[in-house]
Length: 229
Image (cartoon, rainbow, N blue to C red; front, side, top):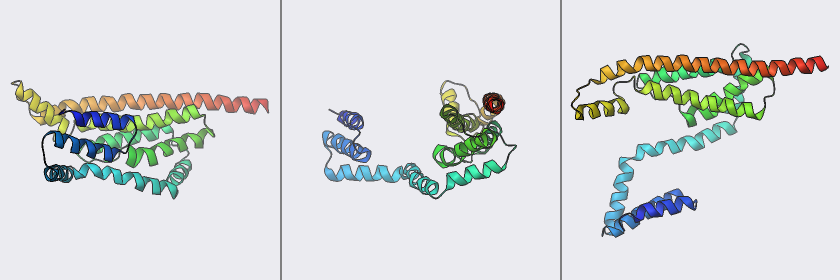
């Protein structure tokens, strides 16, 4: 019976019910099973919310990004990139990954999928390709969007361990310490640097391959259309 809260969450999510209502209902049910009074349950829920209130801040980005897109943020990003004729999709994504990894390595959380990738990076990457080759196939647009998301993931994943105060580094150090190996977080960060550099190099190569594939496909298509005319 103590696990009834988990069961309520599973059923609620499976039925696609309101998320907040499901979680609150699960918390109340768990509290009642644990013989807590209504006052104790509400007090516990309130304390948990206050303690973790910062985790809810990301919800504010959703309506904000929606409003920005409604008033032309995406269109302006595409127009800006189209003016830079020499900027390719691969170069843009490689540059963003480098910036993302450098900032996260310094402990600065810059970027992310809702804040940068969805409203800015992905449209700009698409705009760079459209400026060079014109209308793109839906398959290639989806591929560019996937590369945009991967650019953020790679920069974040390989950059965070370079920052010696990162939660991942602290977890590794504490785990090794529990096994009898005293390792300084600075040592771990130094080891992560060449891994981060190698990740950037490999990703730049991957982006160059993307540029070559797009160029080969759409330039040959243009030549075929021109020859037919």
